[in-house]
Length: 530
Image (cartoon, rainbow, N blue to C red; front, side, top):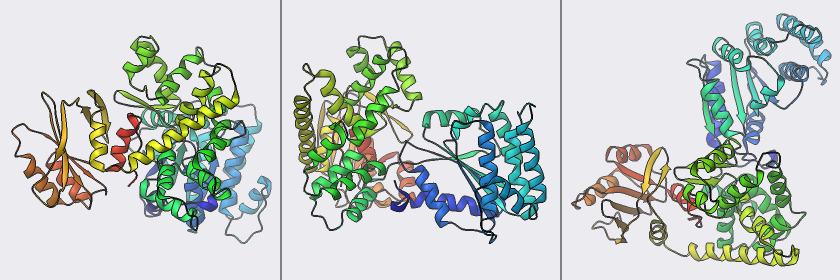
């Protein structure tokens, strides 16, 4: 998302602000921000740095990238000194020698250390400790000025390319001893970042609070479209489809709204055709390039086949072993590499493509190309358009159904698979009977009951705000059944903390639309957009 068009993310901004304020008050809690590519992590940081000002804070933002150690060192020092001098009234230049000269009278000890580091860079001596020396500059500035550094390393995993021996052990020591510096590290490689944090940077003191930047939820996505498309007569069903299609990813939301604003009379299928199917389409080029990264991997076509099948709805382990005529062990070995690359993620017995729109492209564009017998672009285009129209119509048809009807259809798809809802493990029972349920109180108008030979599910549907009293009444209703049921309340709105605690005490699962949509995604069904 463009910095000028920053939207939402209040929760994350408040965490960053709190941690910086805490730093000045003597409490340091480092932060790791992880999330998919183009989800808005860097925009979040730029927004924070633009809005937050404190003369005692020196922000040091660096985009970590493959480069020589010499280049990284000079960039780090240059940014540190530039931001230190930013409020000095001096007309600044982006020249390292100039910045050193102008800073020397304010922070002589820090400048002395900087000159030692720069001298070491020019020498032939081993530079194993240079990274630790760089980080220590922040503590030295604090000693001289009482100012605190907030070091932000974007795509921090790229630090590995600097060739620093003992990078993480040395960094860990700095994190423990340097308590006047706050580190904010960012990564789009979620799997790799979590691995580094759990194995290399897992500390008793100086550890990282992990913040996962998620797509916009339904309400924020709807508000985004309302503001961006203000004045246009766009049908509510089409707006809801955009929320469903993009999954709330701000990059895709922004891209689609721009295209709608450019051609408001263009039908949604035609708009997506330009983006996804046209050779010059932004997303077609993006995803075609993404697939090329597998070309250098041995048996690359096997990996592409796996991600294509997952996108096409054959996303259970047993589906893949059957369709690819492979042993489970072989499939899991390839799937594990795709997990490491953050191409897919796993939820119990299911896999899913992490990039939702990439998944649609695989299903509707890539499929047409690999199944085409004539390589006729015109025929491929017609096939793509027909499937796209069918997908839009399927969404609009499901949009008119009640929540109870959608849940019932979802439950009919269960075949005893295992999934994780939040942090809880759940077996999706294959029911022999699913039917509507009426409750004898006004708080729950309707619900569902699912029965198998050994399992009973009672689901209550709550359209308005869920309260502690609602939970108690629901539990009372469930006690009427001889068999102990799995108790589930589906609510449109997220319950407050007290209600959630009450539900936990009563062993009641509370599912909002986000959790329902997670399951609908696993079964390749349209999301519910309330």
